Image (cartoon, rainbow, N blue to C red; front, side, top):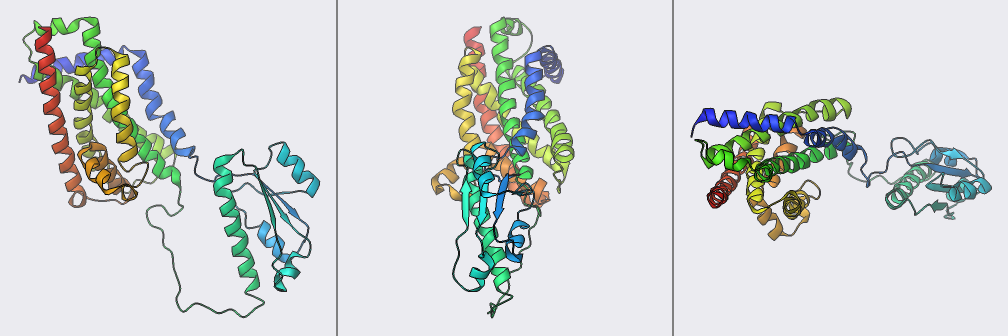
Length: 373
């Protein structure tokens, strides 16, 4: 294997990407706006939900309940009347409307179990589903704290102290940003290498390579290192400037160790891109094959749903996929500050999986090149 040939062929691939504005725009979009939007627009998260409150009691207890609805879950409550509550709900100004009845505090202290009415705009499905539970929990907590001052309080024999580590503010955007970055690393590395191979075939430049003193191994390695380098640099820039600076996500671990893990992931996924490119005859065919591969990698790797909640068979099968190990690596390094002594097993798994994919891809690539010759 001639190192000089690999370097020159790789530089050719870099120039080819640099002259393709569509690919450049895709890379820029994926590692900037898409990561930021994917992290901040979490549909299952209750964030800045508008709420209106009708306080017909005007008591210390009702005032306490009103003051319990705080950011970032809710916007400052709008104090309205009953007529305004219905009108605002019809106009779509409020997702929730809470009606505290008259004599609410007196009935609570007397043990009469008064009823609070909560109106929910169910057209805002994600907020309505989660917000109802949030509001019930908040009201129950405030009522229990208030009542405990006026009645005998039977304290439990134990106390539960909750200490949140690694994400003290429980921001889902921190987790979502890193998982979105992992998805784009996988997707872009497969697309770039597969597109590089298909582009050679469509433009007829493969025949030019066949008459040159280069081997299929050199051609394949050049595409892998060049496309992997682009994704590696773009992912590191996204990690530092988008995730760390723009989203204010703390990075607890070693960035050098994460770069090495990313390089191992790219070793596997770029080989996968070459492998898929040997089967596809055009970019539309390649896109269809990519969907069949990418969706299971994304959904079953543990980034979207915890692996522990999946069937055991799926958990074991997905250990053969590079994304599973990379998700474990990324969470351990970036969130928990894990060192090499903790994540070496996942890095070894990535190396083995990448080597297997590389071998299959090289076999298919040689076969494809041989048929064209």
